[in-house]
Length: 422
Ligand code: PLP
Image (cartoon, rainbow, N blue to C red; front, side, top):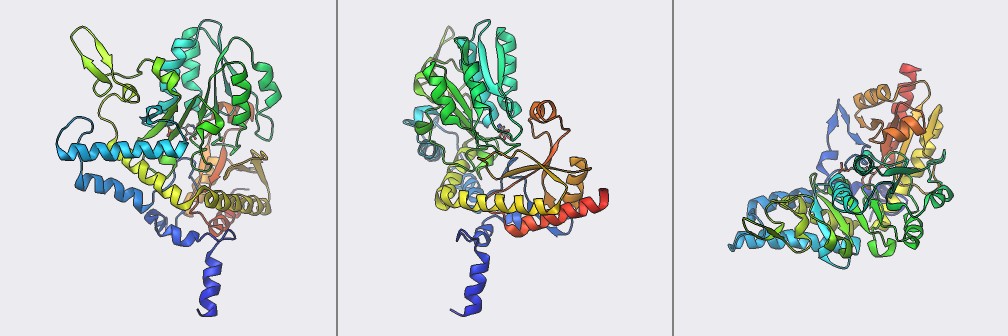
């Protein structure tokens, strides 16, 4: 091979040896301009982009086997059912669950938490009992528990967060008592990037027989989920944050809990038999999947899992850690930046403020340069407003297809924002 060709390939590869430029070819959306500039998509914590294999899996489904599942004896229905159930098996393997009975298709993390709060929380909570979440919860893992506690006259308690954005674990241990009936915490914070010590939390909780739910919406894109290793009782994530489609998500729950829980939604699919007098519920996991499911969403999620397996979490972590370090360095060099969330253990999310600039103004100017970042509370209003006393932050969140050149563009954008507004 010619030396200049070899040199070019070497340049194109990141330090991890992973060819990010080749991978980007699989994401057609990244190859476009926004306001005349090549798009720099740094809003991956909100939703990440989809590779062609996922997009094609959905159109192939509609082109070849579209039919309702579990109902027909005809061939198309059988094929659609096979594809839908094959996706469930992929999810089971992805999270390392024992059985497909423990894998429920939902519309996303939000529905997963609601299902557990209503079907499980309702049945175990009594007046004066306590539920523990943390100060860094996304609204999805806060509001359902708040509503439930209000309804049951129970108390919702918050694990405090230190200035760096880490859970204060000795305070958490002090919160454990006989009244605590449930703990639900975010695995990786969407607004701070903190990776929480969930295994430790679960170990402490289980010593007191308290079940634990993990909001894994931001963990699944970055870390290998292993429900056996963490020993969590419930875990939810969303398809659209792991390269899959919107409107599909997963609730993992231990079979022993699901067996006892009542359905949260009812109607077709979740029944075994119905008379005018009574209904016998279906077996697990179908008892919790009322109505025609999101068939193409499940198939797309299956394709997304195949994509992640092909890339490998080692490559994902290595690439994202490199981007995180580079972003910290480049943004630091820009000057006048205050980082919000400086935990030791972090995923590739950088929340920050530009001194003297409102986050919304910065976001608007960056958008004009084709750079997509998130601004505001990031659906963690109590954390940003009450804990950090801020009106919002700017959040750049990186995925496997992002490059250092894109971070350079962000740093240039910040300099422009400062020039215009400071
Ligand atoms: N939990 C966390 C930590 C999140 O980041 C999000 C989405 O941003 C959610 C829950 C809610 O996910 P969804 O809107 O897909 O249900």
